[in-house]
Amino acid sequence: MSKRKAMSTEKARYVRKKGHDDAKIFAKLIGLSSDYQNDPKAKKDVIDLSGDAHSVKSGTKRWQLFLYGINRIKNDDFFQTMNGIGQLLIECVQAFPNNIQEYLKDKQAAKERCRIPMRKLKELLQEKRRVRAFINKAMFNGGEVDYLTVKDENKYHVFLNNDVISAFANSIEVENSKAITKNQIPEQKVIFKFHGTNLAELEIRNSGENHYREILFVMNKRKMMELLYENIPQTNVYNDKVLVYGNATKKFGRWKQKNSNRK
Image (tube, rainbow, N blue to C red; front, side):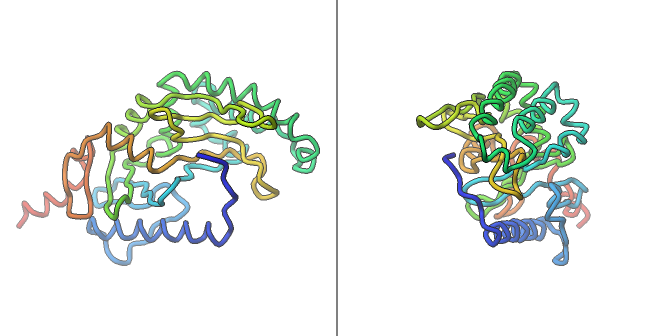
């Protein structure tokens, strides 16, 4: 993923609404009522008829998995028990001054300070168990969400959380960012690579007063779908718009079978 421009408020609003609408379409496709209401701020975009939660992703280019301030990391028990990852995220944030005006006076000094904890973070994430814990938190809020459901090519693809976590951890390589140009400073990001290409990036966002000293984790949709399709086979068809993969078949859609048996 190359350097990104800040998303306008109008564009961000459109993206949120599109995601909300796609989740409602999925809800209807699996038998929920037309007046179904979800919570656009929660990772639990849809609760299916078995009571299981789905994180519904759409978009065409990338997913923003989280954008957290330092207090969220400090107060989240999951981050604080994640084998040192939470503390290093805090150290990455604290490498930057509290005041954005101070940061703007000497960006290079802050970025140089950030290199040390960012390098340590990369080193911790060489261990698969830590990658599993991190992606579990980022995508499924520590197991609170049961499925990743992705709208891709006008169909919904349902993956079980544990399948996604294992496929991700077993398939990626973790590196720090490098300085490509003379004025860039290396080790400002932790990069998750798949087949040699950037799949996801973790960095400190300092793009203005409203987004200063925040931890941003984004993922390339196409690369993630490539990873999922390659590692988790399709195992069932719920209907012509909903496809089911891997171990999700063992649970997802069972209500449909029960209803058929009653007839």
